[in-house]
Amino acid sequence: MNLAYRDICHNLGRFLLTCLGLALLLGVVMAMIGIYRGIVVDALTISRAPAVDLWVVEANSRGPFAEASRIPGDVREAVARIAGVTAAGGITYQTVEADHQSRKLRLYVIGYEPTRPGGPPEIVEGRAVVRSHFEMVADQASGLVLGDRIELGRNTFAVVGLTRHQVNSGGDPAVYITLGDAQKLQFDLGPPAARVQIARGTAGAGRDTVNAVIARLQPNASVDAVAETVRRWKHFSAITQAEQEDILSRSLVDRARRQIGLFTTILLFVSAVIIALIIYTMTMEKLKQIATLKLIGAPDRTIVLMIVQQALALGLIGFVLGTAMILAIKDHFPRRVVLEADNVAGLGLIVLAVCIASSGLGVRAALRVDPATAIGG
Amino acid sequence: MPLNGDPLVRLDHISKHFGTGTTRVDALRDVSLTVYPRQVVALLGPSGSGKTTLLNVIGCILAASSGSMALDGERVIEDGRWLRSDLRRLRLDKIGFIFQFHNLIPFLDATDNVALVLRLAGKDAETARARAAELLDYLEVGNRRSAMPAKLSGGEAQRVAIARALANRPRIILADEPTAALDSKRAGIVMDLLRKVAIDQEAAIIAVTHDEKIFDRFDHIFALRDGRLEADGASPA
Image 1 (cartoon, each protein chain N blue to C red):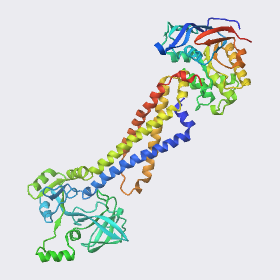
Image 2 (image 1 turned 180 degrees about the horizontal axis):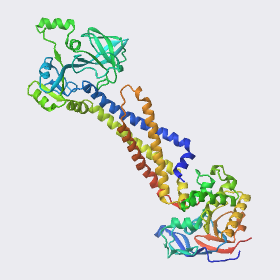
Image 3 (image 1 turned 45 degrees about the vertical axis):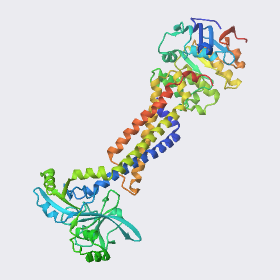
Image 4 (image 1 turned 135 degrees about the vertical axis):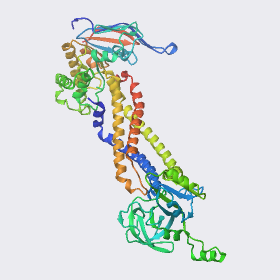
């Protein structure tokens, strides 16, 4: 005879309502974990998109994401000639705001050479950029659709392809254009400013500048050896893909990560307190019954088991409902919510541990009940 | 009522006090009491006279400060010390409890409330439920065996509670105000049932009561005042 199960069945509506409340709380915890994972994934997405092994950037810079980096575009030729490098490409990154259909679009513009590394990893609709100018592949998160035309700087670009989940660490959707167009967008001055530069005699400087040169290596090549070669050139820094990801996850999103991590910890703590209170209250409501059970000869383990089983059932049902709820709505969040199986399983284990620990309060109260209290009004 | 066999409950010079020094309260003073099989006895007394304390001592819930006690032939307390460590098992095997407000477990139906005691004693589910059904029939509430306690009338609930007290065939039944929540007709029925149980099961029934309308149903009425047993006489009826 399972007393916990019978008690739950007897008060099923109230128990399920309690589970629902807990599910909402755990859903928020899970959303926070998902948002946290989303920020990390978003931050790494753009650096992983070109699928390269090495980033050549300005000397003493940890660019192009964490710090500014500008190097001559022809560095690409030198990098491409290093033994072990199979492909190299210049790349630029910049954030722009553009007007589109009466609204401001904040876009992360990536300039790349279509025949070299740096382009979109996957096109889910349409095609890649094939013309030298004024074509764009945009991420679906931008709201742009195939055939849309959008003005960036002094030129109008046509959307020819769409990607998915290509956003930067700030959540801005990426758009891919040719390197030439990107350089023009980034480095060309407006007519008044250009006239000033001409008057000062500083005009005419080449605009073949990129933020980084990225390189793909042969499978058996040593990325550290190639990086070391580049570092010997002075004026340049070489960052391996692993280092780049480390910079992104540790530096760029570190504060956001810690903020959300702390908030998630607080939420978990609040959840633990609430679970403990629920279980304690459930136990306190049954003190007379517990006293009676003790008096008629129920061993302590029967009573402990009843409380712990109810706590576990509460946690488990709340967790399953919370998970289902967040899975159902996660795609409606403005930023990506990434729920990975190990995170969900980890939270599940934490919830179970919290339930067992929280039931300690109820168990303590139950074990202290004097069976004599069953006698008398 | 003729006395036969050895006493089921025997208390020799039992005392119980709480606190020490100026805060000391003597709840029981030198109480000696003997109850035989088939006897139905009452404990009377005003509030604070020690009735519940005495019931708790006999029920192996509370240790005596001094004196000896034997239950069903087994010495349980000697010089104020427990001679058994497993009091839970002792209660389960030898004593049945009936409460003022029945104290049925609200999330178990009538059958399971009775079967629970047998399950705790180690009986399998089928045997426990069969015995529970038999007891409910015996107490004439067999037609309510699937009812939850909240759906039972006061009299029915108290009969289920009596069935629960009898489930493990204890020979000592302690009842705390068993008829206080019942009208006189139902109180009479419950007392008749307790009498029947005492005879059929060779049991001793000790009830704490203030209910004057059932005084005539007891073989002996023991009056407690300030922790002392003042009277030991036959029922006035």
